[in-house]
Length: 257
Image (cartoon, rainbow, N blue to C red; front, side, top):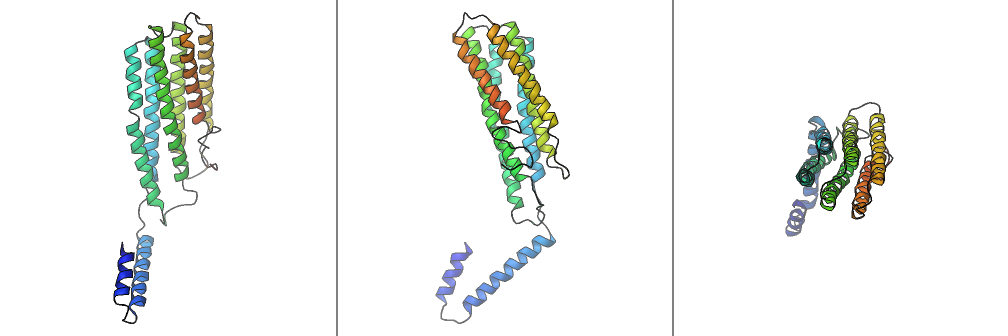
């Protein structure tokens, strides 16, 4: 806002020699003082708090999947399915908090002398984008469970229910491992170890195959459930791809996006 005011001031008193030069000199002095203050008293950075917010988001998502898996293992209730879908829709709250924390971290790094080489803000942005996509897929997964209850009237058969319960628990473990990997990438030192995440993804994919087998082996008297089965498996496949370091969205820590 000072730029147009200064321009009008110079034009208004343009007949006086040296006004423009004095104004430019004052601007340069002010800029030098600002730079000197930032060097002597460096402003804080908020990368750590942004990483914690993203880790909390991943943990919230993982807890939702794990609890749903435990419920399926104990039994089946259409009310439980609707309740989990409602909770999945409430992930917008943690997503918003993580987005605001990351925006604050990115602002704190601009022209900051404390900004270190290879700052992790770009990795955090990619991780948050992955979790945003994952939240949509989690909603789709629980929507499919609700639809399965609507179509069959009694939920999945015992064999399929047990397989789905294991799939949800292992998928929760993969999401949690993803959040832990993102948090580990904030610590200076060698690159974070991706092996735990890869192992968790392997277990979740094995469970996914078990679910597909249970779906194919179940009774075929309800062809209207086949489409729901397809949607459910598609959401799981996309979710596991999203958090995979070799996936389409998240390039892994320290990799070019």
